[in-house]
Image 1 (tube, one colour):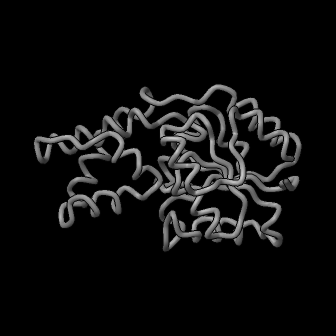
Image 2 (image 1 turned 180 degrees about the horizontal axis):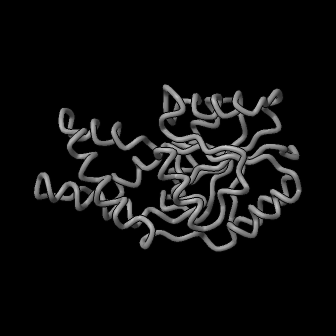
Length: 212
């Protein structure tokens, strides 16, 4: 495996633990509007997709009002209801000190992504944060990563690793022509990740240090 010079990360479920809040926010939204919840495994399978696309897929024609409810509920609870995964801060700091160029490529809005990173003092380590508004197409399309690579002038895709927690992340990497790493602390079923064949499985954050 190559010694990577660039490591890009997904955010939710990869760097910071926002998934319980995401599930709670969707449950609140669906109960508020329709008096129902949806299966947890279904919601998890959509994580990594922009919010509006997720809602449009489930309730076409209602996505804007649902997104408004979701965002109001989610953002009100955001700072007190998310955490950072064990070992992430230490590993990101070491990678930064080694001169690895890092960025965040997420389907979340950039403003909220930055808010989450700043809560845990992670923002200073990343060259950029690309949110849902930074690309025309979204995961599993490779466009979010292609936009990110163009932004910082990557000339050799073999030097890039994308780290994520969902099949959408792995497919995004494949479609962009870069290597992928799936994390073991994911909420996605491991068998779903194995089906899309990531190049690496990272059992803990420090495992990344083997590849730089």
